[in-house]
Length: 142
Length: 148
Image 1: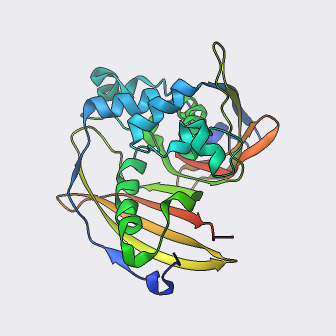
Image 2: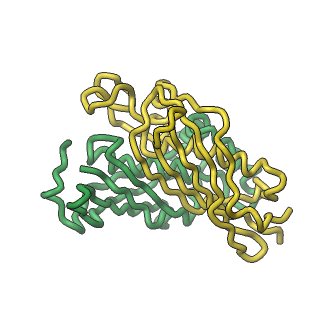
């Protein structure tokens, strides 16, 4: 394990990352997860249910955002608890090249629990300047 | 279609087991843009102490959503799938999920709250191995938007 509990200070940033998202990424996530809701791949259907267009799976955003924490901890299974609320959809444009959306992720240490040997990482997750996940918190065993 | 107010407290017993495949772990890891080698490489997983490739932190959603699908498909529940929005999600892991695990999920409807013409439904999936070992608890709230 690359991180030691003793060195952690509440409020310290663990890192930041920009995730580029394309329509192909949504198709891959649909296949991998089994979530084939057409709002994630069919523009006409998405618009017919009053969405701005095709949107990313909330679970894609949640799953991709926690990678900052996994990379920091060095062990995927160190994340023992992870929760979020989904507040805004992430519309993903149909582009010929380049990303259809960008998701910005920043993580800070929100709490350190020496008794249980865990740290809570609070994630700020935005796209197009809007918070798309709220109360995104990952508890990491160190 | 109206949400059945008596849904809260209902549970759905575990159905067919879900066998976690090595290639599925790799596919899901690629799909969430995970880079940790323990998702892909047996040797890297072994160095962290796992006997098989390790699933990403949100992998259990596959098992949880299969359990949720049974509630949504239950005609007596009154849920119109096309009006469902995912409101929140939580994963609590009791032990890592690795390839080869055979998982079952028991689904509980923890609460149903009216919201205007719609409702918020909170479900909990208790995921364990077919041998009875506790693996994860997932909690999920969905909003079923009311008809205008």
